[in-house]
Image (cartoon, rainbow over all chains, first blue to last red; front, side, top):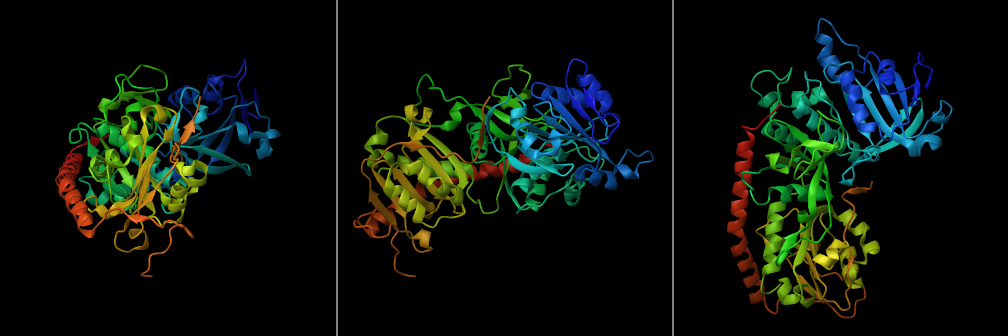
Length: 487
Length: 60
């Protein structure tokens, strides 16, 4: 059924006479068959109603239109079509009241008059994709539909226009739009501005773009206020997938580059099943990870990139082994990269004086599972009461101690406990430190003892103090960096 | 503020130093740095080479 097909806001409800072909007709001239095919693949399982907002002025398309498309002899329209998706059949009366439709709002997609890719700025709830679940880093947007405010939480998506933007700029845009949506520290940046960012370090013309080198993307991130780090599989042959997972587990979306294409990875899917045989001594939580959640500008939002491709509908066309390099856009004050923190932790745990075999009979009883991640002290402290930290002394010390803005955390558990998301302790390390100085130590927490640096916390010389602990319990692992999306 | 503040207000049992003597502490620092520095150097070199490689890795 179509309510108001010739109006500025047609309301299209799927039924026996109205399917995706009819939507394609209604959404002319902006939507093309390629675009409707992608929307159908992404949304057909959940969408009941599509609201078409005609003559929509999109800030991202207007940016490329003003700076590029308008210079053509034959110019496309400067306006777009915005599609809003709902998981229930909604009437014109219902969409006038947010409380009627908020719960069923799946998100929006801008349809640009560009070819071959018409799919512009898009933000969909991951729940709009029935087959996609996992732990993801997301951001919020509030949009207005004829004055009615609606919220949507997801990860931004855009397809390349093949002129100003190809996959490199599209991936950068998705990453940057996530950051500007989530943190006021980062400014909103538009596609043409992104393309221009690289003009000082490009050979030849900047647009129409034929692509970017990975280092140019890294440099663009640096100019936008990040402190990016680059890893290649060749140079980290043993830890590449583990490090990529560690940054995602830290809530840092990364640019993941295959041979000639780049996607944004912002989530993971892990199966917490006991491995057989059990790993010796120390293993990492990355062993449970079997897929990443990515946005690939050539496809649809929320692709599952598996360790090995299985040919499923929601699946990326790539697998782990095809990712050749990745770039993690670290915040300026994260000086210590993941691989250095891992070296710090394994060195400390292995020591004869402060290692777990020396100080903890509980931890020595079986092989350890470690989970490494970055977080902010603010977020870590926010969960202290709820988590309990296994012992009241630990909770109080962590609460009272001044901490740096970013901390590296290594949670320590045994296999059986980790599978039920419980931990025995953790190591906290100052992310602004150099790994070779032992002063980065904030705390080492085993079930029997807490060792905290109460000197550096007050900007004084390191003072490592020991708090004996009794009757410690296991406690829930930290969850805040990623949002769990269930099927 | 030169005096150490109480981390847990009113705590009866004060925490003890981790190391029994300054010598043990200095030995901890020395051996930690000695062990970790060469391994960190290798990691730093791996990242430098990754950055070098990224100059030739074209995305289109």
